Amino acid sequence: MSPNPTTKEKIRQKALEFFSAKGYEGTTLDDIAGACGITKPAIYYHFKDKAALYEAVTCSQFNVLEERILRQTEEGRAKERLRRYITTFGNFLIDNPHFSAIFSREITGGAGTLPESCTDKMSGILERLREILDQGKTEGSFASERPFLVQMMIVTPLTAYHVSRPLREKIADKLNDPALKEEVEFHDIVERLADKILKALTC
Image 1 (cartoon, rainbow, N blue to C red):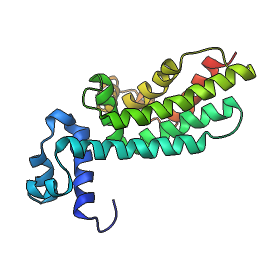
Image 2 (spheres, rainbow, N blue to C red; image 1 turned 90 degrees about the vertical axis):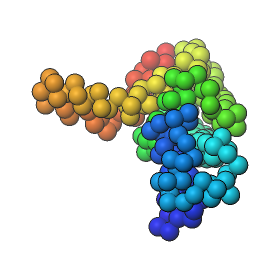
Image 3 (cartoon, helix red, strand yellow; image 1 turned 30 degrees about the vertical axis):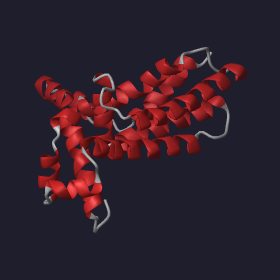
Image 4 (cartoon, rainbow, N blue to C red; image 1 turned 180 degrees about the horizontal axis):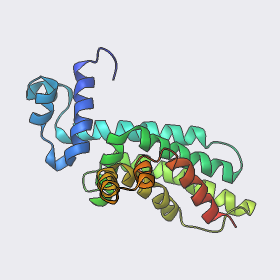
């Protein structure tokens, strides 16, 4: 957020935090208004309703993610492009934990509250992945694999990284194992994941 955010920017940021922590159903506009120090009508001045605010918050994140992935995976051999796809996707989720939590909620909740405009963006991202996998098959680099399965191999561990941290900390404390305590924060998760997925797909 900018040093002197506008009211609209404050609303979006607080909404992102609440939707991340409490989900769409669990968040109220009163929650967001109170956190921003404004009245609920002030939110309505900028956003039609809670659904419009949720769409603005989530789809802006998907817009950035799609733009980065498409830019970073434009050229190159299939293996190089797939690594960049995974690392771009992964680093975005790691760097944006609130979005990662929202994304995780949508996955486990059957995408029941995900706006259609967001699924349009996800379709564009998946289409790029399919293109890369087809290129790899043509080059003789990759065995044939379903794009949705590869996408799940990327998204599932990365979204779980954030939501499972409290559990990892509790288990590490119980076992009192220094090695496990170090593993609670595995900074190289994205690169290691890219290595494993490329290894699994390589002919």
